[in-house]
Image (cartoon, rainbow, N blue to C red; front, side, top):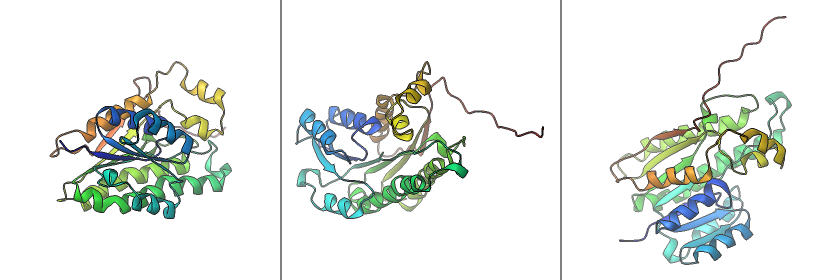
Length: 251
């Protein structure tokens, strides 16, 4: 059997790092990209340069992305799976109090960069009749206070996935959107600027999704028979469900 290759963005922590571990354990080669070179090097050291190729750059930097693609080693050049995991949430304030710079960073990362890497890798994915797994969020379906632009970016990811499916009809390329609910990773630390107490409070007693849970979901989708496509997969911990609507009343 020919060894398959996955490109996993945001591979330095959380879902991405867990997915690298899962796919290497399953015999795949992995291109691991992310901003933190030292964390990527730990993946290479752990699994070997023949299994993991590290690409350290900011996913928002199109020139660096193009250079990473152009300089892939021959063994990693044929890409069977793109996992668009890189993304972030910044801030918890309501829209009228939010930081516009944080809004722009979320859009640049979660929307523009995701669309860019997808567009650049589509020829290789079509050639290999590969697959795309986009990591969206339940925030794209269920609004909540402070979700504003983050939720909007994830709604884009979900709809972009559906539209890719239509455009790629007949190519054999599969496209899936995974939409996790509450998951305990570095997500809340990033969102709150490193507030460990806020992160601990959010997840306390909730039995949230783990990074390994999502890695297993990605692995399952990627290894389904080629005639099957998972359009979207919404995953919540059992402890979480959709909240009720809120009502403001005259006093």
